[in-house]
Amino acid sequence: METLLATNKFSLITSNTSTFAWKVRYCAALSRNTEKIGTLSWTIADSFLRMPSEQHEWRKEVFKSLLLSLEEKKYFALLRNAEAIQVVAKIAFFGNKMVRPIDGLTRTHWEAETQLSTLIQHCFAQYPVAKFLESAFYSDHKVHMLWYIQLGRGKSVLELNGFPVQFTAKMAHFFTQASDELEINQAIRWAQAKGYGASDIMAEILAWSSLATHFDGEEFWKTVIQWLAKTTDASLDQVDLVLQYIEFKRNAEATFYMNGRTWNALYRQAQVWHIDVCKAQEAKGRAEWETSGIQGFSKTLYLDTPVSYVIYELVNSESLYEEGAAMYHCVAEYEYDCIEGSAAIFTLRKFKGTEQTIEATIEVNLEYKVIVQAKAKYNEDISDESYILLQEWAKNAGLSLEIEWYVDENIAPQQQDVVYHHVNNTYDTQVTVRFVLIMLFLLYRACS
Image (cartoon, rainbow, N blue to C red; front, side, top):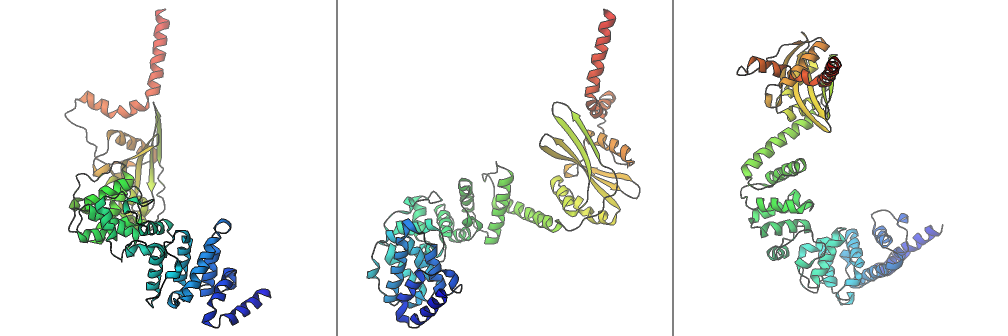
């Protein structure tokens, strides 16, 4: 009931614009839950409640003082704008760093945005500051606001706290000349590119590229900007595609660097990669099919390090695509044969410790239960080891093996025999060792 009476009293008090002071004082003690979200009263109350209490109670007093002074100086366009009120609250956050008292502020413009610009400059700019830096007070980035304040007090760009890029004096100069249309991170990338000799067009492209969204791994990305600064014939879409590809390669290969690379070559690679990514996305969850019922295969060798070989069936579009992408062949085109049930695709994997490699991709004709094709990476012939494993799997699974297996005719017959039986001899290493030990023991007994 008390809240209702207070609200009704507030409605009467604020019926006249001259009672704005009462409105501010009321909102300073108001719970934002008693006002409709988005209204001016709610915005003022919310701003008060967001300010730290106890040790920093002074910030609320500065905010209240700013609002009352703005009303007195007839900054009505600003005070009727909820977003502008929030900016005033951020100015109050740094109220102890103002270079001029608010009393000296005069109104020269009618638009809310221009009035805000005048207020920011009056409070913090003892020396000229680039206008694009005012955007800091429209965000929640306190460090950016501090940069404005430091520059307004005469600090150099090279002296700013927490600056994410190591600027040269040339870059610092360009930074202060950045366009008003750029946000602060964009201005950093624009100045950086200009400092490395980029054309106006390329510097603008880099300012609007994905590079302006982060400064992680700056030592590496600095080399990318230096490399792109030399490029003259590229669009924003092309640059962003190449940047995505570079990030992909960098995550996949820690040793990926920009030295010796050309724009044309890297752009072609990025295009191929993008097509593959789109295909993978399209294949994801697109189709699944029933297993053929053919049993898989596994074999483990216990040598210095256990090595396991596994053959299993691929039963969805995504796994077919991933197999083809890893092996650089067209197994993904067998998707509809698998769906129709005329073919089954298997993969032969080798596991050694934490490492996994694909040794062969295998096609089985389901009508005749025949292994008709087995290919290694780049559609090359499978290894002798893989062929022996296929023979064993075919025998266990009741399959016929009708693929060509080439043996070098230049190898002597006895060497061919060694190659052919190399895998099986390796599998039987432990048995062979035991047999030799037994024979040595028997020989010792006979001699004694």
